Each structure stands twice: as C-alpha cells, then as structure tokens.
Length: 169
Ligand SMILES: [Zn+2]
Image (cartoon, rainbow, N blue to C red; front, side, top):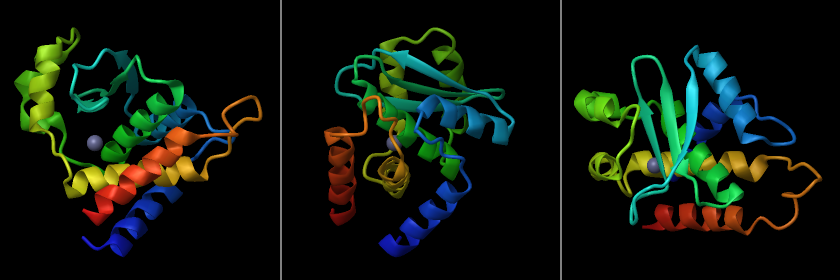
C-alpha cells in the first residue's frame, strides 16, 4: 500500500473518534467501546520477554487489550493506542485464528500461551504499519493536560521514529 493511501485511510478512521482533550487513553477506549457496542477491557500484564508489549484479543462478547504493566505510563498509552489501531482497522482477530487459544488465554493468562499467540501475529506487515500509523497520528495530535505530560514526550518522538523506520523499510 502506498504511504499516501495508508495515511489517508488512517486519518479517516481517526476523524470518527472522539479524542478527549486533555488526552486520556481510558476515556478514548471507553468512547470507542460505546460506539461499537462492545466492551473493551484494558489488562495490564507482564508480557513475556522478547514479545511485543501489547496484544489485542477479541472474544465473542469483549475486546481485550493487554499491555505491559512494567512500561512507563506514556509507553503504555502508546501500546494501548496501537492495539486500538488494530481494532479500528478490523485486522484479523485472534479469535479468527484459533478459538481454542483465546479460550485458554481467558481468563487466566500464561506467558507461554501469549508467546504462542504472538508468534502468529505479524511483524512489519501492512497491518503493523497501519496500527502504528494510527497510534502516531492520534498521539501527535493530542492535547496534554497542563499537569504533567505536555512538555517533553520523548516516547512519542520515539514512536514517530519507529513508524518512520517501518515506512522506509
Ligand atoms: Zn501491532
């Protein structure tokens, strides 16, 4: 997919969102959940070493977004918005891949299971670029509350660099 088309598609998706101002990722997730009529559960867990920091799993009733609980708040925010990007784009749901895996992941998660699920997910694929583009576009445009996060946001810069790297590969 050409960059222009990708960017246009992502921007169109983002325009439909109600981005809270000042930005709050939990409020954003709630508004998406409300719009889609399905709950989205945010789950902070210890992701296995060497795995990505986030994971989206869709079950019959609920979407789950897992994120690394050890990550800094800004990094967690980025992980969550990235996984939200997958959800918004309607990328392949893990339930479609293997229902059994999802069932075994829920409600208790074993790191081994997560690892196996993650092996099935795509790296450097159009889906990853799209989710990363959405995360970057959302986070670039947000207004931070004056109480803290508005000044230096090196991790957002890092996110932008990551997406740029992805796009030139
Ligand atoms: Zn991803």
